[in-house]
Length: 449
Ligand code: SAH
Ligand code: SF4
Ligand code: F3S
Image 1: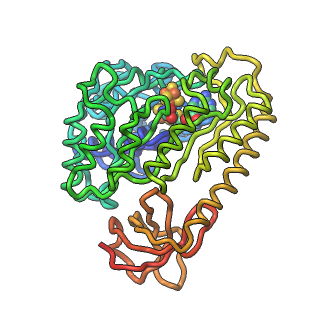
Image 2: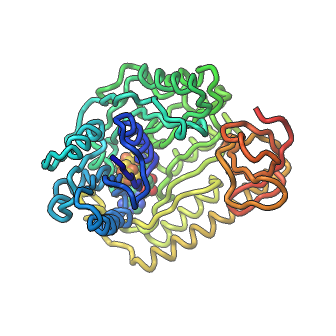
């Protein structure tokens, strides 16, 4: 069977799609281009209205392929699948399977049954209360591990119920994975040549604080993974400020392979808006964390998520967001216009901000962020660092082959070398020669290893 997976949304979805690809390939299935596929899988995101709408337009496009072959069918997974569920069967008769993030473990078997001709419609939408280990989590194909970077799930779900957010409804309650399983998967990956691991969860700082907990905190887990021989870079995402423990902050000062970057979603710079968002921290507490992090690791690069136009947000509230962005000096940020999601508490909060006004705020915020990003990158000119090579740069010219790598904080560095292959997955010492708008240019100053 030939299959094609399209993925929307966060790292966790990307990682789920990687796993599904491996699980199907281990059954003899083959990943294929859209034109050739017999099975289409959409792994969907519901966090804002836009990505949800994309799912329906994608399904419309897939419907066009059906004319080619009537055995072609589709599966919808991820957060919109969890939200809409069997509703997909009615609107799109060629959708034969829907699965949520907890149901994905059984999706490969269900897809196989349907492909074998079973005429059933399958809905894998039940939530589980304990993290379910998936088959062969660490078994990676050559193409997937070529760049020697890997993502490892440490938990599923979220218990925070921020008032704007649909994730707790689509991913279910928080379930931590057993720390031994996490460490074991990381160990196997590192032994197979992986040099960088990113630990994944909606709220990694509360790892272990649920039914799956066995008295191992997130900080403990970081120390255990960081100790793996051969692991050059360790990252994690996402962190909720309310749960970050002093031990995690300390780890940034002690663990040399823990990368100097942290994504710490602020969402808003006004205390009354943070309260309405149910974020359970205020700006004072947030800044204490930032200062402690900078003290533990002076070169730490902070990034964030921000929402503008949350119900009730005044111009003054918004000004406070701008002030926080300036005060923290984020290297970059993701900013979004508030979007009403079905069933969340903020749907009933008033007054809604005029969409035009929200768009203007978003633009002002992004202009400020671009200026700060530029300054942060400019400060790095002439510094020496190490680029972990991910592949070829998009732009090429006559000066040599341009490669794209990342520094320890995750910034993109493009540099040119005479090698035309063999550099992916290598560490290359470089000096930063120029700061671009969103990336750096460097020159090689040492031997790749
Ligand atoms: N677990 C992560 C966030 C996952 S969602 C965390 O707590 O940091 C990613 C981002 O989408 C959020 O940080 C938030 O900024 C944004 N987001 C979530 N719901 C939204 C909504 N209803 N409208 C606009 N942005 C939203
Ligand atoms: Fe959503 Fe809040 Fe959970 Fe993040 S912590 S996933 S924003 S409810
Ligand atoms: Fe989207 Fe679900 Fe991730 S809503 S952001 S795919 S958890």
